Image 1 (cartoon, rainbow, N blue to C red):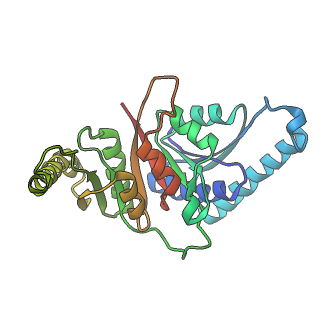
Image 2 (image 1 turned 30 degrees about the vertical axis):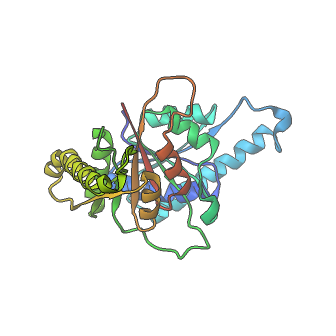
Image 3 (image 1 turned 90 degrees about the vertical axis):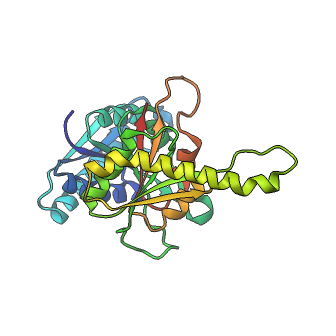
Length: 289
């Protein structure tokens, strides 16, 4: 695997913000940054607003301008730019397999519409086996802030993923920040005449079991990363909603995506899908078996 951070660039504001985030990440990882623009040669020529030569010229200029700006802002960063002909999803998936990390931009549409991940981003997420980070631009309706908070990991303690934990702990270690491990639990459905009497005891038992499972999942990783301060956040609630609330102050939100081999379906779980559409912080999606 060629060690790079690769970012998909299409000239939009979203991709430009993602490019800056990717540049800072490449510096932290001490790897080159690869700017990648895909040009689809299979589009219907009658549907194009401009001819292919003009479109390619615009794309090449976009790459050149972005490359020059990054070199000026980060003189020590190794930057390479590449224009690749082909379907954007296929090009980005192939690039992800060769990189440490793929970074893409997504549109922020305000509080109600949230975080819109486009069709290309969702298709790439559903297909690649490599980690992908989606970055949204600053919302002008929200106060601008430097994201220097925690790395937040959403965990399912019934089947904790080593890939997700490894990614989150390594990120917190690079950033020098705390890591918040979040597990949201709910009380199973109750049936019987005395639910009121049983419910408090059941809630206590479920909470204790969840905290114990969270501690067991984190134990080997706290040993591997002794310098990372870990905040254990085991709460009654809904995973997607809890992660969205925590994203307001988070530096990065990390979620998993179980690799599904079936041809039908979105291949993106309900929690991950909701987080992608509404989280304010950059979201890292880590595939796992």
